[in-house]
Every structure is written in C-alpha cells, then in structure tokens.
Amino acid sequence: MKTITKPRLVRGNAFFFSLFNLLAVTAVPFWGIMYGYGGAAWLAFAVLLTAGGMSITTGYHRMWSHRTFKARWPVRLALAIFGGMALQNSIYVWAARHRVHHRHVDDVERDPHSIKSGFWHAHIGWMLRAWPSSEVDFSQVKDLERDPIVMWQHRNYWKLVWATNLGIPLALGWMTGDVVGMLLLAGVLRLVVSHHFTFFINSLAHTWGRRPYSEENTAVDNGLVALVTWGEGYHNYHHAFQADYRNGIRWWQYDPSKWLINVLAWTGLVYDRKYTPRFRIQRARLMLEFARLKQCAEGEGVQERLREAFEREYQQFRETISDWQAIQMRKVENGAGALRDRWHRTELRTSLKELEFRLKMQHKRLRALTTVLNPEAA
Image (tube, rainbow, N blue to C red; front, side):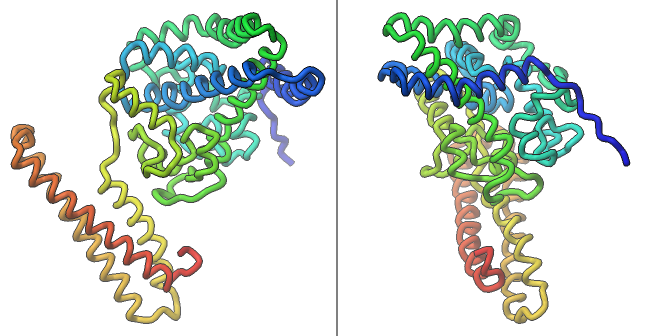
C-alpha cells in the first residue's frame, strides 16, 4: 500500500492561526462576560473589519488581480494600507497566487486552494503545509512591478501589518480608555472574522450554490455567501466573466464592493471600469440552459412536439448569435471613425438592444419549456 507523505508543516502559519482562533473563542468571550465591551470597541471592530475586507475584494482582487478598473493614487494607497491590515500577504504575492487559481481552477496539482482537495484544504489547509501549488510564481504579476504602490507595500509589508493591526487598536484603546477591549475586538476578533470571510470564497463559494453561467468549474453563485464576503459570493459569474468589475450584476444582488467602485467612479477617483456586455451574459446563460435541456429533449418518452419545440428554440438562438456576430464584424469593418459618428452609434445600440430583447424573450420561453421537459430544474 502506497503511503501518502504530506508536505512539511508551515509552523509560523499553523501557530498564528491556532493562537488567534483560540483567543477568539476563549479570551474574547471571557473578557466580554467579565468586563463587557464598550460601544467604541464594537464600532472600531465593524469599521476596521469593513475597511480590511473591502480593501481585499476591491483592491487586491478586482483592481490588482483582475485589472477590472483603474484608480487614482490616493485610492490605491488606502487599499494597499488597509489590505495589508487584513494580513493576507502583500498585493504582489496575493495577486500572483490568485491569477494561478483562475488559470488552473480545480486542478489539484496547480490550483493553490483547489476544492477538489477537500473543503478544509480549500478553506485554510493549503496555507498550513508547504504544498507545491502554493509556491508563488511572480511571472504572473510582471505588470504589478510597474505599480510603485504595490512594490512599496510589498517591501514594507510587515511594518504595515504591525502598524495597523497593533498600532491602530492600541491608539484607539488609549483614546477610549479601553486598551484590552479594543485589542480583543478590533484586533483579534476582527482579524479572525476577516480571515474566515475571505476563506469562504475559496471553500463555500466553490461548494454551495448554483451555476447559472458556466459548468466548466466548481465556482457557484450564492447570495448568502455574498453577505459575508463583501459581494464575492456570486462566484460562478466571476469565474465566467473575471474581467468584469462587478460580481452581483443585478440591482438587488448584494455587492458592496461594486457599489464602492461606482461611488469612487462618480467622484473621479476611479475610472476605466470594465464590464461584460449584457448580450454576452444572456448568451452564456442560454447556452448552459440549452445544454442542460438537450439531454432531457433527447431522452426516451419525450413527445415529438416537445423535441420540435426545443429544436426550434435552439435554431432561433443560433440565428440570434449569428446576427450578433455580424454586428461585431460591422464594427470592425467600419472602424473607430464610424463609431464616433452619432448615427452609427445609435444604429449599433438599437441593433444590440433588439438582440438582447430577443434573447430575453427566448429565455422566458425556454424556462416554460424546461417546466415540461425537466420539472426538477425549473
């Protein structure tokens, strides 16, 4: 019988996670029961938790890892400082690993936190041992070497960690007269909660939810996960359209990271936001629904009229895609000059809206057909 040898334990990480998680479930409640926590400590906990978490999702993830928008230096500096406070490594290291994750998602040999290696491994285990997939490949982030703020943060990372995680709670505790309470809530508990919220993206967001846009990997959409991950719970969408600055694309989806980016764009501090055209999103959803429904339509006992209805809808879908491709070709042929012309822009916009409407109507018809062919999916 072959013996599986686990990589060596990363003692520093194991000690840190063990100590802080132990303090969070023992010292924090003990102090609360014995002495209580003031409103200032709870407020600091909430504000610093939000600042750190949003700096990871907005800065580390969407801006630096995926380059979905650009920001002026004050925003980049703030995101770098408070992102460092979240104690998840420097932007340079974090982005390098994250880009590898997207390139090799679910590959147990190359994805740093592949869910295929188990929930525990994806959540925290990948950081506790020296797995080969966790090695940092800086060739993935050559572009970030040209960002002076990224490299400054990388060089001074541990100074920032100590200044923000110890210095800020100590200063707030001295000002409010509650040093221990501030250290436990705004320091220890805030850091532990922040970590697990981020780790849920690697574990829960690849386990529990729906896959409306792609079945090529394990990433799922889950609104409940989005509530504790600053909008990152719409992970199936993110993996399908990783160049989009949004994760929650509908107005009712909880995505505070998107809202922050939009507010900063309104002030002029953020620009060049990238988003996926609505037609491409609708196309991805319909392609997946057609693929799922095709198996049902070709099954035994299916009435011929239902098969014909499915084929008719699929043919219309292909025609719509063909029309969309023709419009894209026209854009290329006409060149940038034509797109600067108001008449051409209006004509193009009208044509695209008509195609979007056709896909929207077809989606409704397809859902009705699904209720007959595959009631469980409906």
